[in-house]
Length: 563
Image (cartoon, rainbow, N blue to C red):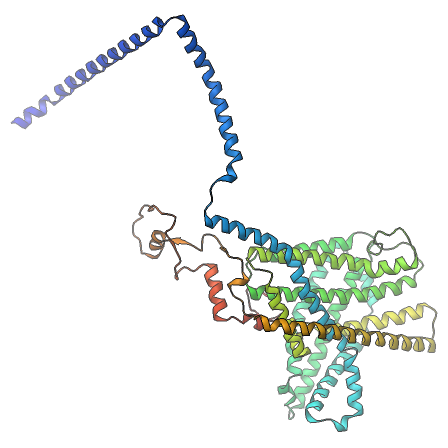
């Protein structure tokens, strides 16, 4: 009963409460108005002078506030670098400074490695033109006095010479003049595409040829005495390989020759296209030490191949120049020279393409390696380890050195034998030599060139020998294993290196509800084995296999990509 009565009186009680609330608000407003009126009366009673001062203060207040804001902003801007930094930030600044200094050190360390490797490659290349023919002749003279081991080695060398000579004879039927004019009619875009296709084919054939010739020249292959069909089959395959690879290199040489001899900027366009594509494909990728070693080897091989090709092109251009009566020179021959004497033409033909092509290669390689080392926080001293490993491969023999670098010296030998002698003979015919005269002059040129090559071989070998003694002394003081000292301290990939404890618990737990993010303090970061950072992964690999660099070769998948 009471509940029912209470329920009926509830609306009247609500109305009464609202009336009381309005009355209280009106009384409060009245009191406030009374207070404000008293304050206003006091201000008026203060006199005219007080009112004038108050008015002036009110007008000057915005100006003072604006000036204060301006000075505060200036002080903040000037003192922004004077904010107290903790020890971790200072160390990070030192590491960033070290990385910038390392970028300028990269060319010194890189070119030291490249110079030694180029000299070693030149020594191995000259071996096929100087030492190998002499050894073959000596073996033919003293074949009855040879021991078993030496006879086996001589048989391998004879097989190499046979394969190279047969492949060269087959390729001599290729008319390089027709190839030159066929490529010359193409546009710059087609020339760029053709050169890229030839370059890719060269790498593929180099890998295939390395494996094939290792099988042909291995002891296990020589042990197949009861299967002559296998001997013949592998020899034929080797000859076919060298013919195809030599054919690709001839086209690549002629294509670059067309760009060099162009009267427009075809060479510049070709170089810029190739070099920027190389930069784009390399610098913005994650590299480990094995990948860096492999791309360094690839750069050395590419530079050596360019030197061989440019030498052949220079010989062809000199012969063509003396057989031509034209006065207009290609753009790449001039070297911005104002004279047109014979000496300037020779220097331009020899040095002009070298400066353009090799100069662009140097700049691109320096920039590429500088940014690779910066992004992956690798110190340039790692090139010293590459240097020692390459030296050990060189002193172990030509075969191991070729396997390390993936250097197709047999194909380069075929290219030289196909291009250079034919060019010289064509030049002699253009100079009105006939029959016996051509034979005599060609023989004299052959003897002269052989003498120069032998002297070059001895000089290069002596330089490498003296350099090798210094390397052996330094090898006693250092080791080839890579430790954390070879890297600049710091996080390789921010966001993967540190995780706070609450976040780690959330990631590793099976959640059915979403919990609010907890408050994280500065020192709650931990390293966990379940979610490893790139730094931890790199450290683990270095500890498990500290001498992994010694297993790196040019065409071995030691990283994510073969360069």
